[in-house]
Length: 212
Image (cartoon, rainbow, N blue to C red; front, side, top):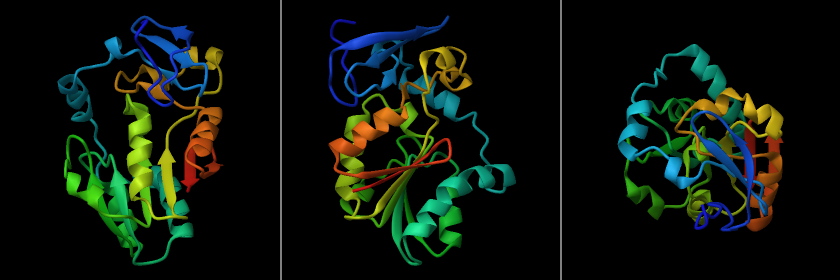
């Protein structure tokens, strides 16, 4: 792991965090990101095979309720007719549909299911990124890309469950999904906010709003 470095800040000072039967988890000494070393990542083929098994139907009321926690912060911050991007929307872009029902226009991007890179040629009134960033090996590149296409003063609304401490992490179901490789804490998002001159709001347990 000598050549390993943090995918968020580039720091090479990495600390052992926890280990389970399948993977090791390191923590960056600088930004506190917890992550799985690159040699333990799935291949893209194996990763997509897991995503293909997800069943997030557009008519699923429970999934709608879950996503409403990301929907409401968007609706509270931007007006009807605003144009946004759902980044990492997966095969069933329900959040985009919910936003459109509230009068928004939404573009879609997903590495596997909507790989239309022309969406990055526009600028947006809002961006949503729900249950995505934990799948990303190089979150710095994602933040830089998203902030570069987000209009000034507009929200990046994310959902991801937060690391509390090593003891709770060791028995945390969230880490057991092999497609989850980057884990953020409040302290890590505070680092992100400082790096990108953004204001940070954490709503409830897992909704993060960054406004640059």
